[in-house]
Image (tube, rainbow, N blue to C red):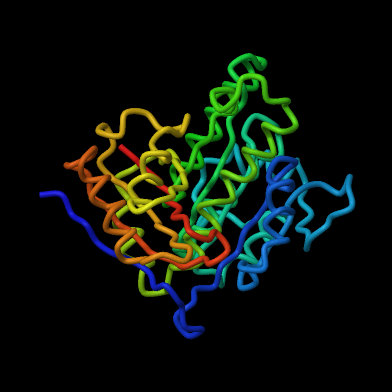
Length: 308
């Protein structure tokens, strides 16, 4: 029988708030982490840019060597049987006392593709709950770049609790005439959503249950939507299901969702959204959280992470 279980709290007490860190890896990750750094609701989250020394960072910076990352990426030997190289040590020192780690990167380039799997492996040494959010190349890009991205993604899966994957090509479904710079701004916003919403509700007590819940899924896909009116939770869910990154919702058996209420009746909006999910995915196991955000006014927001 399908399970529905609530997690998190609308207001997390300081003693129950997990230690959270986000690493923006390479150019794509850097752009997203810079936007997150402007969000006052994420003041509890430590944020770092991760990359080479060829640029002036805007946030705390972890400088790495591409050679170190390439070597670590290719090594199959377990970490307990070899010493960490200098770049791995820099990363490990910062993440080892973290409860939740977000890894944000674009796959296909050297920095993101080499470094993200290595960071996920390092986090697994300390059993850190690791959420990797990665963008994949356009279908029209060089075939070698796309193959490299797929190989790197398969390595990220091995050590991540949640892998959220975003195909750049599906951006064009949102608006085929959208200028590319605007399209990437949209992508940055969408990748940021699960970080913002989950960070607001997750407690330290939730982490073991979330780990267990996500363990059978290799890859999660995202949907997000807003709703207005008397059934705003239901309408927000319907909009979320139109996400270009979601396929047939009935094919997913594991769904993580956070419902955000503005100035309405939060519990009622959450129940409307959950009933709407059950209508379209009756066999799926669901974990859900609820948060309040007065800034969205008389609307509700639903974010889904759905996996097979």
